[in-house]
Image (cartoon, one colour):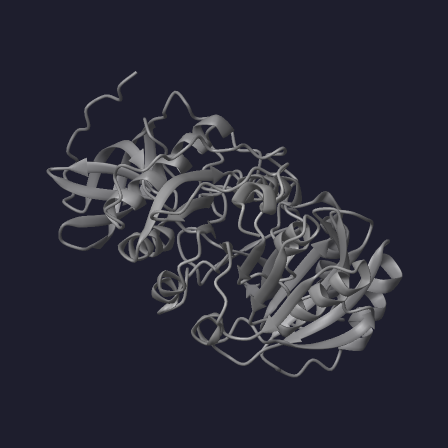
Amino acid sequence: MSPPEPTKPPDPAVADVAIQSWATGGRGVGRVEGRVWLIPGTVPGDLVRAEAARDHGRWVEGSVLRILTPADARRIPSCPIQDRCGGCPLMPVDEEAQREAKRGFLVDALARIGRLEAVKVESCVPSPRSLGYRNKIELTFGERDGVPIVGYHARHDPAVLVDVTACPIGDPRLEAPLAVVRSLLRDGTLRPRAGRLVLRASSSGADLLVAFRDHGEPFPEAAEVARALAAEVTGLRGVVRLVSPRGRRGGARVETLWGDPWIEEVLLGRAYRVPPGTFLQVNPEAAETLARHVLEGAGRPASVLELYGGVGAFSGALAETGAAATVVDADPGAIACGREAAMRDGLRVRYVSGDVLRFLRGARETPDLVVADPPRTGLGPGVAEALAARAPARLAVVSCDPATLARDLARLTAGGFALERVRPFDLFPQTAHVEAVAWLTRRGSPPPPPRGESPRRASGSR
C-alpha cells in the first residue's frame, strides 16, 4: 500500500516525509520539494514528521519527531533499546526484507560508485540465525549523569552512550562477563575509564575471553578486576589488555591479566589458537557458509595467494587439496597463529607478516588464484593496480563494504579483469552491514577446474 501524501508543516525546518527506500547504512530516504531527506529510524513505507538536523543544500539529514503512519512492514523490534542504539537499524522489518535491502545496497554501490551496471548480483544468502549470532561484541566505557556505564553509541549522536545490559544479537554466553563488569563498575572496583570492553566466545567450545582495549591509560585495578572475572565467569579462558597507539586500530600490545591470551576456534575444520586482537568474522555459522562458497568457487588451483588473510583458513583448506598456498597479513599475531596450525597439521602454507602492496611488488610468482579479504577500507592504495600487473587467472574479493568494493572492482576491471558475479551474504542480521564475494577472471583465462578434479588433469600443463 502506498503511503499517504505528506503535508507541509508550518515550521520550515520541519517536513512530513514519505519514506521510499533505504540508503546504505540503514537510513530512510524520502524527498520533499525535490530534495532528498535521509532519516535514521525510519523504514520504507513510513510517513514521518521530521526535523532538519543538518541542511547540506541538495540533501538534508533529518531526525524523526514522530511517525505519522507506520509502514505495513513494520514490526516490534526484539531489542528494547533499538530505537536509541545505532547498531541495528533494519530490525523493525523482517529478515527477508533486510536481505532484499542489502542486495539493493550492493547493486546501488556497484552502479553509482563503480559504474558497473551490468553485473550479476545474486540473491543474499541468509544467516542460519538472526539473533544471538555474534560471538564478539565491543562496548565503550563512559558515564551518564555521573554514573559509570558501558554501552553502545547512540543513533542520534555517537558521542552519547546507550547503557547496555544485554545485546539480542550477541551470543547469550557473553551476558555473564558483561554482568560482572557492570557490577564491578557499580561497586567501584572498576573505576570509570577510557577505552572499550571486548567480549569473545568460542564458536567451537566453551571458551570466553575478556579484553580491555585502551591507549595505555593508568589501570591500577586491572589485576583485581581480572581475578573477579575469573572467580565469577564459567568457561573464562583469559582476561587481557589490548594497548594500542592513538589513531591505530591494529598492532595492539597484549598484556595477559589472567589465564591465556588466546581463544580456541575451529575454522573450516581446523583448530586455531586465536590471539585476542586478531580479526575473525563474528557470525561463525554464516561465515562458514561464505567460506564454503569461496572454496567451491575456487575449484582446484595449483597455487593460491591469500591477501589480508588473517590466520589463513582459506589457504589451509586449499592446501589440503594440493595447492601451494601463501598467506599475507599485517597482523603478526594472526600470522603466528596460522603458521602454528599449518605446521601442526603438516600443510604446505607459507605465511608472510607484512604489507600487502609491498609483498605484491616484490613477488615473482603469479598464483592461479588470489583471495583478498581486506578490511572495511578495501584494498589499500595501489593494491588493485598491483594485482592487475600480477595478473592471476582468477580473483575472489571478500568485502564488508559495498562502497569500497565498488571502487576496487572498478579499478580491477579497468586493469584487465572481467567481473563474473557478486554474491551477498547476510553475516550481520538486523544491522545495515552486508558481506559480499566478488569473482573476477583475467580476460582470456580458461575456467577453473571443479573441486573434484585435479589441477593436472584439468589444465594439462602441470
